[in-house]
Amino acid sequence: MTAETSQTLDRGLRVLKLLADTDHGLTVTELSNKLGVNRTVVYRLLATLEQHALVRRDLGGRARVGLGVLRLGRQVHPLVREAALPALRSLAEDIGATAHLTLVDGAEALAVAVVEPTWTDYHVAYRAGFRHPLDRGAAGKAILAARRTVLTEPRCTLTHGELEAGASGAAAALVGVTGIEGSVGVVMLADSVPERVGPRVVDAAKEVADALR
Image 1: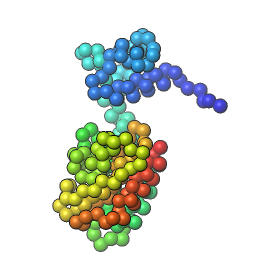
Image 2: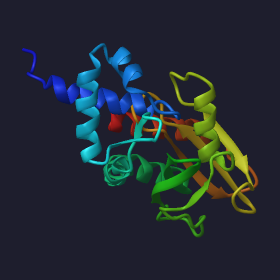
Image 3: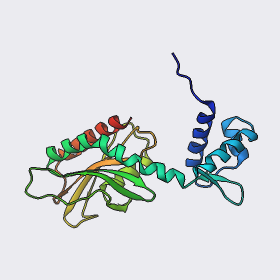
Image 4: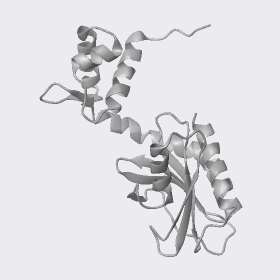
């Protein structure tokens, strides 16, 4: 049995998705064509979304995603972190290195969950909230690699000394998770990443992706 749905809400969510996929905004006419509805319907949808600060219109009349979306987005991190923690704990204990979940935040990589191993004598200190450019460090580079190539399976990216002298990193992007761009990885004090770490990081990325679907 098919559940009843709201056509108006569906259209409003489609508007937000369309606007999120463009850097230049869309006009009422462009939205009307993409949605397959008349301009009057689009005007009403935009007016409602504007009241909630989810959409804004510039002086040229182009609609863009509004700042209200950021307030909603802040609530996503705790949910994502909670879903990822079991896989991160297992990864950190198995490898004996600090494990992390990193998400894209603008042009930066943002660590939203970090788990340190309990049994090692020393490990890299890494904290949730740590930011770095996407093109530096294994976590960001794994995400950029996934952007460039349509992946059906995550691949491991390795780096050394890019964020901290003497530290090596391994990370694999989350694949097949709608609306979330991120990676799972480890960072360790070593000149290179041991061979067994790559496949283990890939498995952890798959676990997290499954938990978020």
